[in-house]
Image (tube, rainbow, N blue to C red; front, top):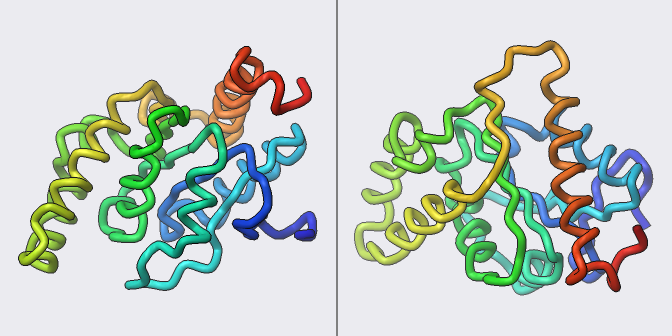
Length: 190
């Protein structure tokens, strides 16, 4: 079992939540606090710490995405720059019965929905890199748009010193509400 200071990262275990994120933006600070809060409430979160740039999503990571009832997608400035994040998101959005909670971490949701700003620049690079595979880029765009249209938390409306803590409480309430639903009540002690 993982120590209390490390993330849960064994995809063969049962997890309640899968978290998709750009490590460049949120790994230090926000993500560790979020995982700590979820753990405190006995909500097991899968956080991929083994990702290597340029790798394909493994079958074990695919299972880690498919098994939980909830995915938390943390959209941030560099999220769309990562083909790994976009592959994860595409896989998450294939899961029709999974609940997706979106967090727009210091990032305007319209940049995600409309794929403008940093996301527009990221997709221009992806289109050059994947010229022979336009369907891949189109699937990423579609997954981003669909995920961004879900209910979520927009941090750009707040300028509070404890914003991260507020987001944790939002996610906790969202995850807790999901676990409290009749659909999940049998799988989680409330």
